Structures are given as C-alpha cells and as structure tokens.
Amino acid sequence: MASEQAELVASIAKLVEGLNSDALHSICDTVNNAIALQQPDPYKKKTLAASTLEIGAVIEMLGIDYWRDDLDYAFELKGNEAQDTRASDWCLEAIRKFNTSRYYSFRREPFSRTLIHLLLCDRLLVLGDGDANNILEVATEVDIRAEVLQNKKGKWKAGYITGRADYTLGYLDRRKIEAILIIIEAKKEGAGGLALPQTLCYLAGVQDARKKAGKINVDLFGMISDGSEYRFIHLDCKRKAWVSRPLMWGFDAGRIVAFLDHILQSAVSSSPHTAPVKTKNKQVRNYSGYLDDTFKRGEGSSAQKEDLKLKEDMNEYDVIEKDVSRLGLSESVETKRD
Picture (cartoon, helix red, strand yellow):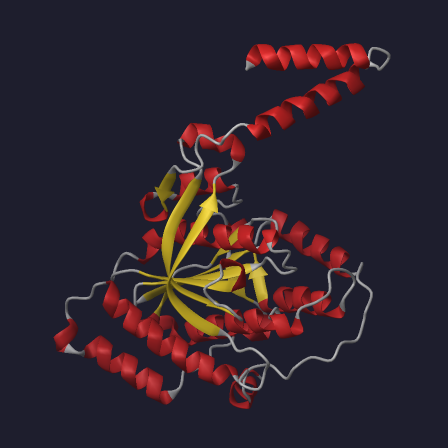
C-alpha cells in the first residue's frame, strides 16, 4: 500500500508541476487523507467499558476540557437562583422514611435508584410542562457509546467507549441517543464520586449523536447520586465540563432540589417544541441567556473571559419573535424563588 501511495503522489506531482510547494503539499495531504479513509478502521469494533475508566483517560480519549479540583471548572447556581427549594412534602417524607428505616441498612445501588425515582417524580410533577406538545420523559438502562478521538484510538487500542446509562431524560423518542438532554447515574452509598468519568462518557456520546443529527442545542446536563451525595454536571457546546461540589442530602437538600429544578428547566427551554432555527433566532439567545443567568461556571480568570465572550456572542443574534408553548416551573416554585 505504501508503494501504491507513493506512485499516486508522484503522478499527481507531475500533473501539477507548475504549482508552488505549498499548494503541492496541500494536494498531497488531501490525497493521503482520501486513501486513509478508504482503509477499514482497525479499532471500529474494539470498545472499552465506561465504568472501568478513570477521569484522566476519559478526558484524553474524548477531548473533554476538565481538570479536577480547579475552580475554573466549578459549577454552581447563580444569584437568586441559588436559593434553596423545598421538595414536596410527600417526597420528603418518603425519602425520610427510606433513609431512617432499619430494614434498609444494606444500601447498594438499587436503594439509591429508589431515592432518585422519588425525587425525579416529584420535580417533574412540579415542572408543569404537561400542556406542552412534548413532555420531558424518563428512560432507564439506555445504551450509549462515545467515539474515541481519531488520534487517540491507536494509543488506547479502542474505537469506542460504551456503557448503559441508568437514567436519561429527553423528548420525543427518548431512547434515541440524539433525543437525550440529561444523564443521571446512580451508585451505591459512598461510591458517588466514582461515577464522574462514566457520566462524562455518556454525555460526550450523546453530544456526538446530537451534533450528527444536526441539533442546534448540544449543551447537556448530568446528575450523579449515591442517595446521600449529589453532583451536577454541565457539558457545554465546546466540550468543556463544569462540575458542582458534592452536595449532601442531609445538609443541602434544598440546594439539590433547586439544582435539579433548573437543570430540568434548561432541558425544557431547549426542547423540540421551542427549538430555534439554525441562525439568528431569539430562542437561541434566550437559551444562552438563561444558562448564563442561572448557572455560575468557573471562578478563576479564565471563567471571567468565558463570561465576557458569551456576552459578545449573544450580541451577534438578531431578535426574531416566536410564539412558543407555555412552559416553566409551577407557580408555587416560582413564588418561592421570588
């Protein structure tokens, strides 16, 4: 194959003898790339399990911008949105009974999933999007794969990272990867922190699928919980990951509920029935503005630059009025925020 490639390049060189060296190199690179694309990918069927990978490997293989314990990657609620929100009484009582029951001392992952089910059910009921054309729906045990960067496949001897997300939330066909907007991972008590690499894999896989499907919004959210500890994640359109500090249900229940409410609202704001056209649409501007007004992403100097760049980008959009379905948190929740 190497000799055939050399002969082809040589023959092309004769045909373009009058061109300068830069142009010739450009043509040769194009030909080489075209030949490479015709070759079968040796790593196409070789996969790695998302649950077995550490954070350093994940960010390298998938091109995610993240650094653990760096404040430039911190994820928090901003301003008035940081006010705690109380879950519904029935939900709080059910969680309290589970947590204090002497019959559930052996707390593996199914126990954590039960608490997540209760919390999700409550907050989706409060969300109040029942009159919209498409409601936000929950799916469980969804297979997701993320493609390893082309220039990293050889090093890691794999083409894809695969796994099964515990929960996904999305619109329309919720089991289609490109329809997903939120990933939730459950772990046994004490193992919540171990789920971050796995969750980032799933978010990256969904983001790839949404880009290929031509979706306008490719910002995604995640939540990790072991029933006691909660973390929230935002993977933005530039593949930068923002991660919240660990929040403990016993001390930070109100903040956990507020965080989850705003992530669900973010998904609603980017849903198909309010989806923007590809350029210069008010909905795009509204969504970017909503994220900027709701979430504080980073605390260092680079975060300040990101914030300034976002404001500059938002100014580039023309305002086009658009009639959308009624969406938003229920009156009781909005009243508590005020």
